[in-house]
Image (cartoon, rainbow, N blue to C red; front, side, top):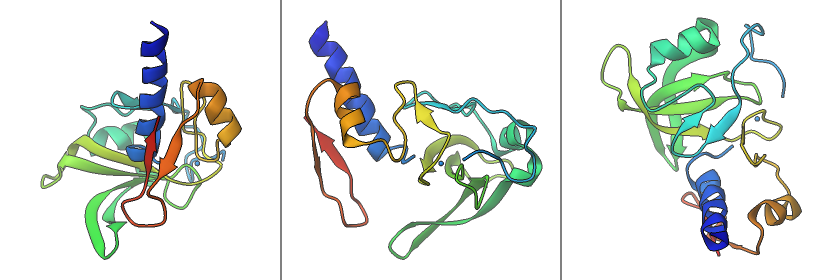
Amino acid sequence: MEKSKNFCRRDLIISLFLVIIFSSIGFGSDESVSPDWICIPGVKVGPITSTTSESDLMEIFGKANVLREEIHIDEGYFEIGTSVFKGTPNEMSIFWKQQEVSDPKFPRRVIIQSAGTNWKTEDGLTIGTTIEELLKINGDHFTFAGFGWDYEGVVGP
């Protein structure tokens, strides 16, 4: 049981760094919006789930906070996606499985990458979490590898 628990924690940390790259208070023009800030890798990012559409984002976060645009993803590569809370610490980019429609749906990837974010995992992992905090949450040591290039970010036991 303990080994399984450690594997889940390790998996959570890996998911944090590879899938959801995690940003202060305020949502831009509509501060009345109060989203759920908890991210569960493979399940949800706040109120965003596997069935969310771009129009759902407009209802959840306010139309003024949602923008479809070309988003930089890698060196020289851009993809059409949706930005939410653009220009704020809580900014996120969403890429869709069905993006060639008037209302893109089914999130394929969500990227959150600003320090000072409200977005975090149930264990409290977020951008800026210290190594000491990661060790405490993980319950054991781990290694980082592959940083300093476009496809960076491997975390292992």
